[in-house]
Amino acid sequence: MRRLAAASLLVAYFFYFSWDRLRVPLSSDDLMNLDFYWKRGVGWMLLSQWPLWRGLYRPMGAVFYLPLFEGFGLNPAPYHIAVMLLLLANVYLLYRFAKVLGAGELAAGLAALIACYHAGLSGLYYYIGFVYDVLCFFFYLSALLFYTGVRRRGGLFSAWQTAAFLGLFLCALNSKEMALTLPAILLVYEWIYHRTAIRDARSLADWLGGPGRVALCGAAMSLLSLYGKVFGPDPLLNAAGYRPIFSLHQLRQFQTAALGDLFLNRHFSGWAQILATWALLLYLALRRDRPVLRFCWWFVLIALLPVEFMEHRTGANLYIPLAGAAVFGSVVLVDLAQAIAGVLARETLLRRVDRRVLLAVTVAAGVCFWAHRNYYLKEWLVRPAMARTGKLQAEIVEQFRVLNPRVAPGSRVAILNDPVEANDPLNGLGTYFIAELWFRDRSVVVYLERLNRLPPEELARTDRLLAFENGKLVQVK
Image 1 (cartoon, rainbow, N blue to C red):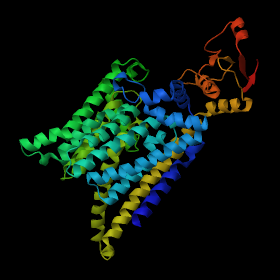
Image 2 (image 1 turned 120 degrees about the horizontal axis):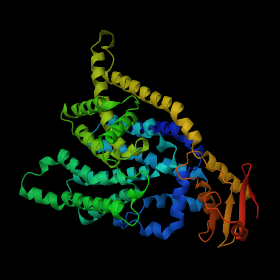
Image 3 (image 1 turned 30 degrees about the vertical axis):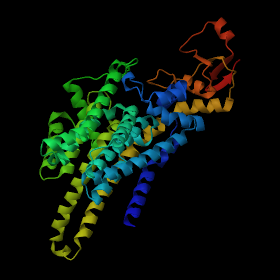
Image 4 (image 1 turned 135 degrees about the vertical axis):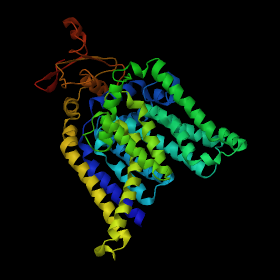
């Protein structure tokens, strides 16, 4: 009953902070992703999951977007509901992850609470475009939990267990590049939790034939995926914003922003604070023989590497590192609460109070502080961003719904005077994506007159001519 009550509270906490995402429209990124996967179709979705060396763009995203688009079109609510269900599943996975690492029931529950809503990663909880991070987290932790489950039972990985793990890892790699670090995390887990199991040459040979083989296969898959991102037919590193910058300046900027986001503290600045923070975390990890803290310290350090030298890759991009940070912080909080409860129990006025009550009150105070901090940041920073997201795109979609234009297969459609969102990173292609997705016909060609100026005679030969007049979409021809 206690677990059911705790789970109900976590779900209520999650929905309290996240239910309003249902009102957020599709963003320009969502429309771009939808259009990208829709043009390639279901066949590409199925076949693209396997050739890691080709560097295809996050094919697991097609598994999310395409079925929802086929069923619900450009209605954003079902997409948000699907992401919310994934986020809730990830909360449970993080709870299991904490338990497997050796965190107690209370610490595991607190880690799950942190994952329910973290204002430093606020985009996860309203921006559909971060579904890649959500999917990657789901498969990353699923693979890690499967691996640790086999190891805790003393298994050395049969053929089907190896295939199941590598399948989950493949899904994580196809979700986002953050999954590249999983083989290194496996080695850290073995080093911390199973180092004593390798006592002689025979046990070492068994390890190399089981967990070592799995880690090696995972490393090979990571290298294949990395090769595809760098040297594939359309390498991700050629896209704007995906080329790493290997400099101390970039490292300092990233660490400042990442630590600020993870700790809900925007006052990190300079190397002194960065190094002092990492040194403090290392001291907490090593001061006692607590494998869970040592593992989580390494987990966060390694999980940050894929985005460490990329510009503007903090916030929701820290979702996988959050798994280690949440468990680490929860274990430390419970230790601190127990110490405070012990001190209070020695006070004259509180000697007759059950120590468990003092512990519960201390933890509840910490939870209230955390919840208030998240609430404050959501009201101050997140709600205004939610209000801006997809506003223009929603207006354009509504104009298409009102006009409801229809065209024959193979038609050429030109759109005049389409509105452009200020500072649009996609160069004002939102209307183009909406039009293509509205007609749902790959043989229809759409022209934005603003980007592809057609001479008058070409415009006259188009099959449909649409225009925005005073913000209203009308059919000119």
